Image (cartoon, rainbow, N blue to C red; front, top):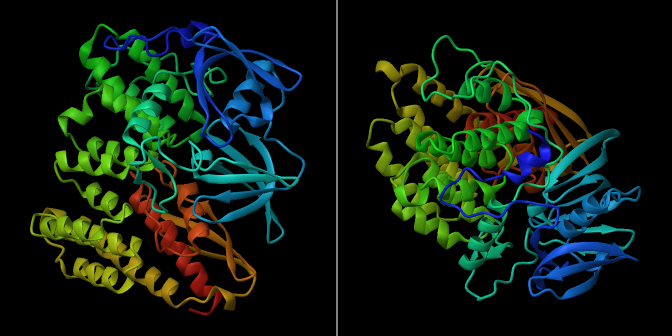
Length: 502
């Protein structure tokens, strides 16, 4: 099947949906750089710096290219074969919703992310940032406001809820529904450039239970686990494969359901595409069924997309799960998170419940309270079948306590400029981290060595958050890779402690 045919068949396997074929003359939502003006139209052409658009009623309007949103400018460039509007030889100032700023040269940009080349402490670095996290980009004195995925946040009905931990990006329920539906029904911007590529030995009949022995070149689930998830270069291809299976098995209800659940997981964990993750989980019935952990992750999508109340409403319908504690803490609902953790501690996994309680307090900046909960983990005796698991949680608690004490007493202004290294136990083996300090600030955190397989985005997201927060307060672990995230935080603390002789 050709790439064009694959694109035309995108989503066609979902029988419950009536979707138009995706063609070159597609109707899409266009917006200006403020996000306040929007219209449904199809692209006609680009003439003398103006974009001609044909609206649903047939009227053709002309809009200056530089007045369109960054995503729309990128779309026009792709359609016309022009150079990315974001690549630049000039230095750029990138301002994040959190208030952090980065200076560097933007080397690549698309609808979902920008890539920035930085120079820190004499080292050349490259970092990728999601456009959802960026407030504005300034190049040669010209400031382009992104303000998150829909501009600087005003909702159409005035009833949005604070959504991100920083409280900057907000969307109403109607806006969430529109974003999820629109993006879920259209291919991602990388679709055309990502070939459908998988081992020819793969069994595309996709039996529910893979036959032994373990063979990632034959069994789809094992291929995803062993070859796709540990390799970011294969993430998009893995998503395309599942879309292909969704189409292949459109008449098999069980496999169609499994494909939609898998798409939700891959978009959420790997690509951080929360709108499409929400779309596919909703198509799979997660919102109606109240299943966990997917129900909690769907609530997290609503939160990250910009509506806290939608997230809380869904959590209220779901069975309590340990990831519920983390999400509530992320949303600032710390006391509710702790009540759930305390209730969980009276069950069969008190060590795990207290670990999550400590994490909730750490995210909220309650250092002493976090330490007290981590100490409760140490009070759980490692006996019975879970002895090894409890011992591992003891180690995590000790490392977390040590990291909090370092960051609580550390004055970065007293740390000499330099590169500091440390390592700490993770899930599979030790993680090695390199921390660059310059001018009293943490300028870079890099994982230099690890043997983790299911890291998802933890290797890049956790360092980025530490740099933005200049510490661990408010730094939440990456969903699905909590132990890896913790290890990066703790190794960073050790590295900084070594800088001052700790």
